[in-house]
Length: 143
Ligand SMILES: COc1nc(N)nc2c1ncn2[C@H]1C[C@H](O)[C@@H](COP(=O)(O)OP(=O)(O)OP(=O)(O)O)O1
Image 1 (cartoon, rainbow, N blue to C red):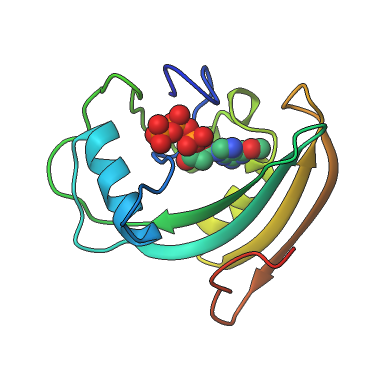
Image 2: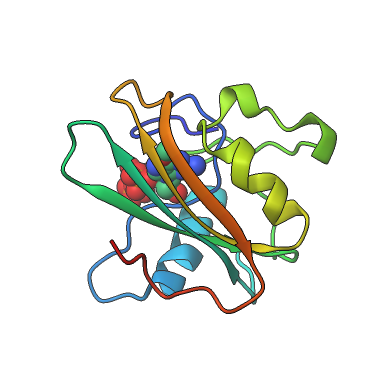
């Protein structure tokens, strides 16, 4: 549960912006540790998403990573309150509107690439394109 900032009040994965001088993978490891106090020896990049919001010139390129192992116990941080859900009780109504499209693909063990254009209200999807892929993920979104 995101406690502040962008996406406040929604259940989301741990994450955030890549910092100067670090790779996307390093950023994912850092965010996991900062937001949940756990570390992992393995993060697999399984998804590449692009989000746009009406009347906002910036697009967000989001890389989704998955791990099945971690060290430590997830703990609440200033930014996130971790919570576990079983696969059949994922709270999609309290998540970003796009999650119900791609999270099931991730949970089937597949990789995916997608783009979601949202209205300014941040919850209405205007346009959506998403595909599961068998090949390597592209390293970035080509606009
Ligand atoms: C439709 O938009 C989004 N959908 C989904 N599923 N996830 C999103 C969307 N927009 C952003 N996210 C993710 C990406 C990140 O994991 C988090 C937070 O993003 P952001 O970096 O903007 O927010 P902060 O937590 O403030 O950043 P720092 O941790 O770097 O301070 O949401």
